[in-house]
Image (cartoon, rainbow over all chains, first blue to last red):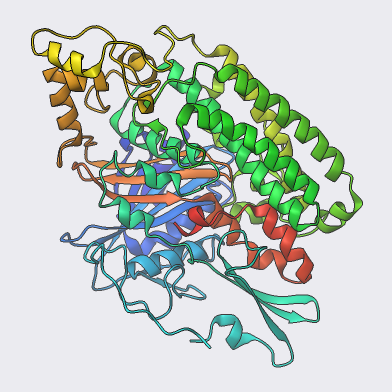
Length: 159
Length: 443
């Protein structure tokens, strides 16, 4: 199995940074330390392994757990036809992680969305502003402590 | 607060605002362009005008109740959204779906794909001035929606594909209406091909405009017809076959240049392939074993309830026309037999104690569908590309987190770079060829 080989190589190269390897329901998943994200992603994106597409990028808020936020990345390799999931945890105190905009272009909007909805800061992002909500919106709506029916006052119209 | 483009714009240029409510911006999306004469120097896309908090709402609904919200994502092909969500949950629960339901699902999702492509190309052609094409395509779409309406009962907000199978059996007269839709769509495709594919005005506005290279397209996460127009062979139905797609014979059309015209042409070719799939699936679909399910005839419901107090009611019961196609007799052909995940047939609910317990266990708060703890990613090929759902379950009856990978999102994020250096008039066909759907983009 080629995927197993990739995981073995990852384990060797990033000693101690890979915390867990599993395949729930057939989806290959690795859990890594948040500071090694950029290195792991560029390793997987390189010609030899060819995980050339960032399929999806999102965040999950595990309120009450420490570290609280979990970033979830789905990589996809078109030549190998294989998906790969990378997960990493972020604590609420230091809510920042490296931006992947240098590797994939769609990371720009995806990270803006996560910044908007969860308040995660992406180091090295060229333009980290809200994507869906408006300027002046307070809080991050997809966090679990943001009430479902909370209303915010209307902002005045722009001239 | 001034936006990026307002801050960066040169003093001698013109800032032009297109949208959010503009006839050429299909949904509600705002495009700010910095112009030097007619030339676009820079642009900024602002999305979020249709943000309804889909993901937040889903965290508050049960797995069964959030299905209607998925209709409203890509509202031109709701059945594919239903399918994507439902199959994600089925992957989590490990449900096997009966073969007939699988064929119905394939037919329904291909019909939706055709209606999606027709809508996209109709709008694109109309904005380039070809109003005849618009009318032809909308006509074909009506025939397709007739087939969908006959079986699902709705044109757009269908909620037809359910966890475990489909809501109701396909309509008894589906073959005639489907045949008519296929014939009419073929005719329209031929006419439109004649009107547009070699039309000089259309070619001038689409050929070699907004060219995307394969590497760029992959880097932007493009999938679906837009990625295939650049020549990259990737289709979820071929790469990770689901349902019965691997048993059917069809091809994946590819483009060469990745310009507006290729995006149009790949969609045209794809519709032909979809028609092929529909015809094969219609032939291969297992015949119905139950009685023809039109307006069930049988004993009056009041009599059935009365007699159920003495003995189990085995006869057919007259049902409301709303339940057409979901009688007890056809249940095992269209839904899984695992009682934990499906609503019991209405006959059983009203006349037997097991049925009513089953019904309450399904709908009661804290009961119902409760997938095991864990997370899952599953994707289907939507009208615009890979429509993926990432669901995290904490073991309760509501998803802990549900994230949608909308194909539009990735495609529209490339808009800024594609129109840079082009002219204002090029924005319109470029935007049209993307098939931007606000519901799916903004969620």
